[in-house]
Image (cartoon, rainbow, N blue to C red; front, side, top):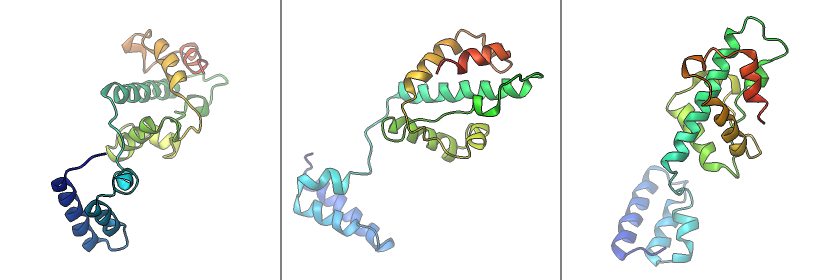
Length: 168
């Protein structure tokens, strides 16, 4: 990564200012990396906590998945006869924190910081790391989800619910 001297100076000064409010953090080291122009350390030391942008389609995908799970949750609660279905069957599985990190981070931010989908947060007890890839499964589930009439998505039958969750 290339930075101009002006960009390096501005960032280094920002880190020196931040050091005053939080001396335990590595702000001074970051400032020194920038001041000395140690390009090989920029990514690790200065920008290591800055993620690449998440595409709009990826964010929309996460919200679609959460909406689908909201529909599963609402429908499950409305079922008079739940048969052998349990709340665990309709629980949001999350995203893999390692392989699907953008989706995982977006989910955490959207649910926790933006305070959306409280029922999913409650059901998952704030834990959204699946520890295995889920995007392919969610894509297959969403293919079935869009075939359900929008007015029925929060009052699905037990067979419709099973049809979605058995897509795994």
